[in-house]
Length: 188
Image (cartoon, rainbow, N blue to C red; front, side, top):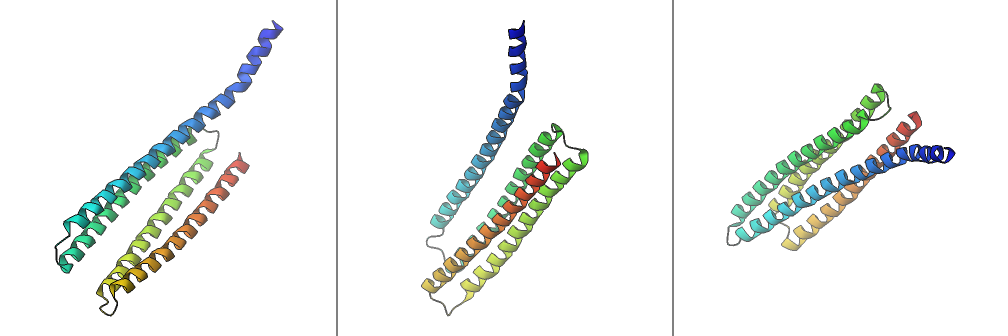
């Protein structure tokens, strides 16, 4: 009898660990699915870009410029839509997780609002970046005093600068996320 009680107690005590492991696996699977979707989206756009470059051979510079500009705007719109869809999936997943948590409604709302605010900051950051790129590329393309090598060097320098700014933005977002998580864990 005593042995049976000990075994039952061990099973009951291990249940929360099993549930957490299942939740962690579900989180990892969800993140992996989203990562795969992003990779497929990028590959599709890279293939479109390659096909575009091949189709532009033999075209006039004005035709090339118009086609590239149109392609850039189309892909920007596709990316915006894709990011919105992934955000909606993330928020639905988050709300599902929050529904099964022991947090208060105010805490759940605060968490949802935080991630919604971060998403809007990212959207604004990407929109601003896109406008800067359009202005910069137009300036470079229309500069008759620059050689092709100078234009390539200017584009590379612009790209490098933006990479650093993107990394700084992501680091800021990551820090905010960690602070929010610590705050949530402290509230539990």
